[in-house]
Length: 466
Image 1 (spheres, one colour):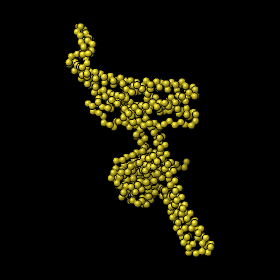
Image 2 (cartoon, rainbow, N blue to C red; image 1 turned 135 degrees about the vertical axis):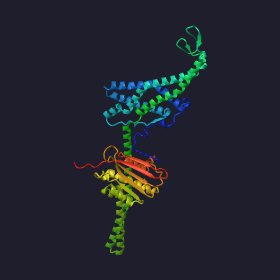
Image 3 (cartoon, rainbow, N blue to C red; image 1 turned 120 degrees about the vertical axis):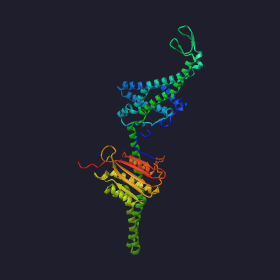
Image 4 (cartoon, rainbow, N blue to C red; image 1 turned 180 degrees about the horizontal axis):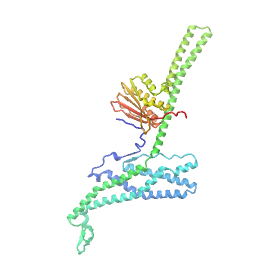
């Protein structure tokens, strides 16, 4: 089943190896994931002193240089440099922790001197990276020391029976010499039972080491995802910018299409009408054949009707006249003109409190029109069912308008993202249009059908008189 929801802003912002099945307890010490995580702890320990130094310098330098003006740019550049550190840590997490964190939106310099200074020093992404480096400094030390201590203690105890004989001899309280590790004055691990216990303890530590390492790696994952990923606000801004760009491109393409239709179709017909009427006038002025002049007028009359028909179709594509009577009437009219049997079910509550705003009605109408056209052209469907209802999405009455279009076609539909040339599928353009008004677009189209598309639009009523 193919499912797409364009309103999930944080989906895809953080993707990681959490979905991968973890190694078994007995194979964990030999797992590549364990050693990658240990490598991550080692590298973060090596970076930690430099990162802490940079963080302290950034804070102190920004505070100390704030009394000057030119120095503010330098301080802002230092804060902005935190983005580079964040990129380094995101790269380590991606390569060693299987955690793919989306890159925050790039810094864009605003216009104006003081706005530039404020945006540099107040760069949230840079400060969050500096906070990450400050918080992870003690964590890096504790994580590395603990994991390495457990690992080498376990290995040492596990192999103790091989190398304990080479330890220097020590005397107990009675003067007897012993070779081996000692606990206190008279307790030496130099007998077979004690050596066996040491090996068992070492074995336990060796198999516990991966999970201790994994615990610290999990803490780093949480901090990386929380401090080095884009914020929900920045994701929302980027989403709105993309949807606005797509909407502008679609509108421009639509205007160009209308211009071509007018130029190549209606305008050409009207030019032909003018020429035919001019020729008929010349015939009549010169006393020519009246019958031939009448034929020219009839031809011009027929061309005028065809031009009017084309203009009506163009106008209907811009704003269907049926929408003037409301969304329900417009959808019924659309269903009546469709090449497929279309059943329309509009909840009376949709327009119970008055008409919806024109922009919302237009998007709802063209969404249904696009989906019905797709069902007729591509899905090989025998019928389409359209349901329009009000739903409570945010806790208020009529908080959203939900449109569900279902066809019994062959399925397999998918939203194709724009390619390098900017071309997109009809469903992708529809999703962009829905997203431009903060709506959601869900597609469920398993191979063999049915295809169900659910569009949810935030509703708004036109403001009444004050």
